[in-house]
Image (cartoon, rainbow, N blue to C red):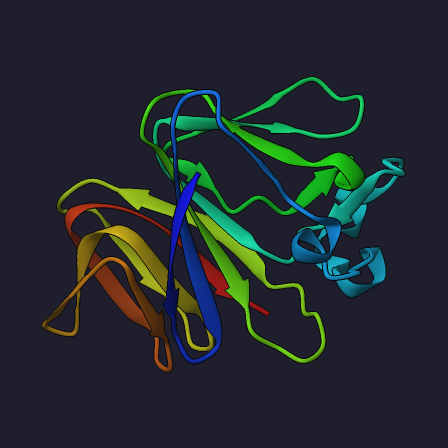
Amino acid sequence: MQFRRIRFDNFTITIFTAHAGEERICPPSELTRGLTAADAPAIAHLLDGKEDARPLHTIPVYTKGGFEALGGDHAPDPRPAGSGGTQFVRGIDNYRLRATSEGSEYHCITPKSEVPVFWQRAFVSGAVGDTFELLPDQILYIAEGSIELDGKTFVGPAMLEITNAHMAKITEPVMGARLWR
């Protein structure tokens, strides 16, 4: 599996590209950085009753092909292109991602912080002409595509810190993630 990194002020983006069948072993320290349900109250209800589930520290955006999440004794969990923003993982002691098609790609957003922090997240996608609202104190990561914001065009990969409410207009089909705390 090949990768390249892009560094922003508060996040590092690692873009992984894989051949069909290739697997990436994801160590627990990378996935969760020790986060527990107490560190992620917004999703504590999703973790309830799932003893092997932990809040996901990194934020994935699947852009091409697809992957399967493999962990513990669970059936493969599909992660197709056009999805992402996963909030938690299960079976973290043996967690892997396997590419399901040639040229599969995903962007892994890793927050830079001394202390692990859970960022709430939502996958963002849309077609040319679609609009969506951005609120103050949100971060927008554009993995692919482009948007227009206040008369300026931003082309992915790009990371934007939002200070005022805005309506973003998609100018090229977009995939990315919106983050907030």
